[in-house]
Image (cartoon, rainbow, N blue to C red):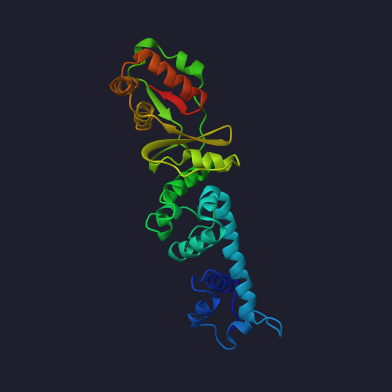
Length: 272
């Protein structure tokens, strides 16, 4: 019985994405009918039908590999091309793509690296991949108009204690065990990189004017930003800053934070 277009597309997808290769994928197909793959894909003396499909399977893998190299340039720099290739081969066996968009293909790479043998040579590599993946997600994240400083100044003084500032929906705050920000920045700027120090740190990743930035946060700003992300009131944020800012004047500390957040486009509309 002739195969219809939808069946043909499904068959070729299964063969091209088969985790163990086209040959094993083909062996699992029980309903090809007379002639098998040869009845569907034309082969000749140069290339069999299976070899032709195998070409597309290789193209599929290398397209994903190239995309992951673009999304994880620092992880690639740390591991080297051959190790990165082997990493992606194993990763795709465990986490085969399930989304039509190739941008999601690296979603689980940091998780995969947590228990990977390559951490023996670069124990910080999972955190590095986590930061790199965050830069992709922030770039593609939801948009919202940044808070205009004039809108903040227009809030009545008596409303400030209960006012809620909202963190931009695309921004992320990461908890990392290694200070990998400088390493990633060095790769981004095409400079030599050094292995990072092991030190628990919160890292802010945000987008401003279509560009993605990242920086380590000191404990005061980290606590204040996390409170903002969870809809804390301005009074609650001031209390948090007062507890961690030490001897610094609270008004000066809050002015400094607000000025920085506004200039970085980190805040969106004010909620009463």
